[in-house]
Image (tube, rainbow, N blue to C red; front, side):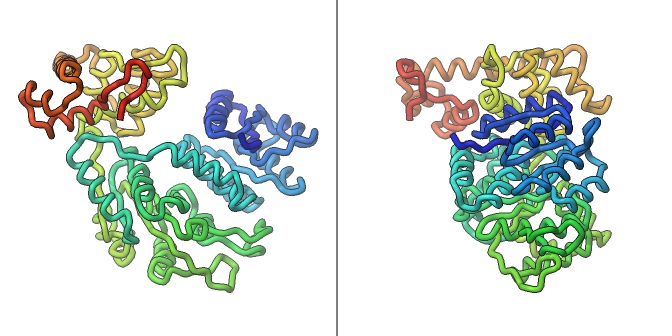
Length: 462
């Protein structure tokens, strides 16, 4: 295990505990501090973490003051600032004072992991840290889990264009899995062993977004104490995801168009031209056609990016995916708590089938995480109701139709499992006895994630 230490500084105990678990699983050594004073005391006592993650609004000494102290250490310690939405001026100040990155709460795991990896690789490029992180990432396949025909078609098209350099525009509501699809395209394509860099165009003010995309030279602005490569340089030979691209200003859209057309640009404050080879993916939850009509999104940039358009339908339009995804997330998070959760209770699954999921797959994943940790059906349902408009609230008594649907699916699974056992998992013979096509049976087994088990060894057989 690599001795890469991360110091987490936050007065919110829940955030510290979550980040500690998140980092330990990824192979980092973690230290925590509940205040800015405690963090600086650790540093003065000789603690030298590889990275500090600090909340900007701490009681007493603030995150900015912790950042300022790290500038005095030799060498300076890279810092990620955690910030609540709406604190743009403070964030700009933090970046100008030397913060390596900032992330808005609540953050996504992938966003945090990529930020840490990029910062550490800049500190020690091409060293064992980056190799270890990539090995970890390769062991976790990125896939868009679905049995819906529309999503399957999207994945098929995505796999066909993965080995090309064509730009792809991914559209869909927040939480449907646009970033997951982008990572799928990257991971199955020829650039899979190169960087995948994401930038959220809605999360940064214009002046910061430009420097994040293109980088800057020392002295370009107050606080630019060293050269800093932008996201396009970091993604050289790999893939860049421009998330929420419709939020980009018209001025930056024009600069981006130049980069896409010529494959070159200049850093802020720089004189030399930088050339890059980057596969560009863009994502948005906006109705782009309306933005084109109102001229808030440049048509020339849109046509440059919209070579391939992939649209992911919302979860409420593919309800067959709800049990599939729920069981997928149970398997993903089941080890977070003891006793281990094996299945979703009938009551909760029935509620899930009734619910409109305004937050889509991300909201379902969060609900499963909550259940795995809390193991309280009523509390999870209450949280869903609190997160939704009144019209979307779950009914007090769950619909009988939902119970019936789930019961029918469960009965079908039990029958199929019994016939497969009787035929020694001969799927052709099982499909004949069940009076269904072989293709249909294969589809059901994939949907249910049902596979033959070696009872003696306790693992799946190939």
